Image 1 (cartoon, helix red, strand yellow):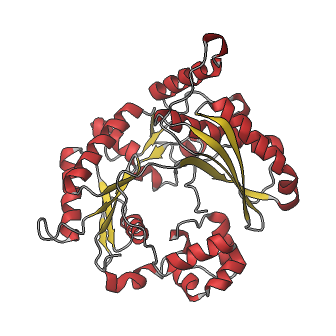
Image 2 (cartoon, rainbow, N blue to C red):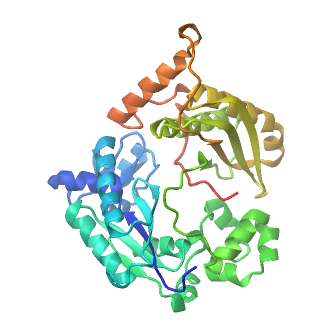
Image 3 (tube, rainbow, N blue to C red):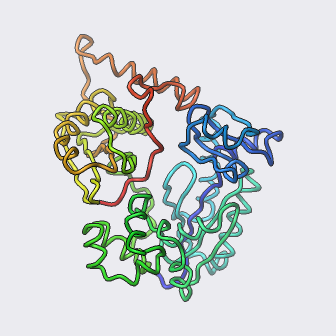
Amino acid sequence: MSGEATILHADLDAFYASVEQRDDPRLRGRAVIVGGGVVLAASYQAKARGVRSGMGGAQARRLCPDAVVVPPRMAAYSAASRAVFEVFRQTTPLVEGLSIDEAFLDVGGLRRLVGPPETIAAGLRRAVREQVGLPITVGVARTKFLAKVASGVAKPDGLLVVAPAGELAFLHPLPVERLWGVGPVTADKLRQHRIRTVGDVARLGEATLVSLLGPGAGRHLHALAHNRDPRPVQVGRRRGSMGAQHALGRSGRRPAELEAILAGLVDRVTRRLRSAARTGRTITLRLRFADYARATRSHTLAKATADTPVVLGAARGLLRAAQPEIERRGVTLIGVAVGNLGDGHVQLTLPWDRDPTAELDAAVDAVRERFGSTALTRAVLLGHDAGPEMPLLPD
């Protein structure tokens, strides 16, 4: 790992809402909510009133009754993303995309040609504003973890450079929620032990954290609290798995509710697989119990697939097999992932063997692409909170 702060984390601000404000001058400076049934994105004017992504539309409108609610335009967001990533690649060939609206960039070899990282980051922000018309925040640091934290602190529309000499002075006063993998449940557990800041975590021994959170999370948070993150920016790396997960909180969930949430997660994952022309064979169920222990259960299919019913059937089987343990220990997080990914090549079937659900998947994808991801909802999800998607926690 370089001793200089040369990693940039570039993150578009309120991306979907910013695209809407860019394309419709009447929305500029106003509270904007993208998505009616569930909030897909909110402008910073709406966020200031408490509106958040994943919130129900009715609650969002109660918090911000003067907000303008617009339907999602996925094609416009995809086009804007492609334009922004072209700016990234014009800046440096070392670009690692994280999602449609954020990426890591390594500018360590550009000092003699372009200037120091801070100058490059400022130029990147200016280029995105001028060429694409969108605000973007950039954090600059020595590690990927700290660059992402810096961009989060600098939002919206900001630039923050964390010099190597000041890393821990910057990091340690921040709340524990800034550490990757610390959600509401873990934060509550830490606060019960008067652990409120990253510095409090850093002052604990690794063994103490492991005893509180388990070996995976304990070691992970201990390393991040000391800004130990050796991962380089990786170019052209294809995911080995795709997944989604949802935190459930402390309230108990009936088996039918868990199956409904699982169905929503499988919908998200399989749609993502089909969009990327990928298929997979290994279905993995991830659980976090009320005692903070984690467990995974996997099943490998005979052939790779991206078909929603096939993946859902396997995931439901894993969930039902785990139900006795869930009832005994309680569950606070559920997730599903599809692994052993390939490039979408599946064995051809004869006409009389063809699965009609593949045509249904294609039709559903087409409707959601045109009218937004909330245009169609599984009947099993009606009356249930499938919840906002969370990043997958480290294994």
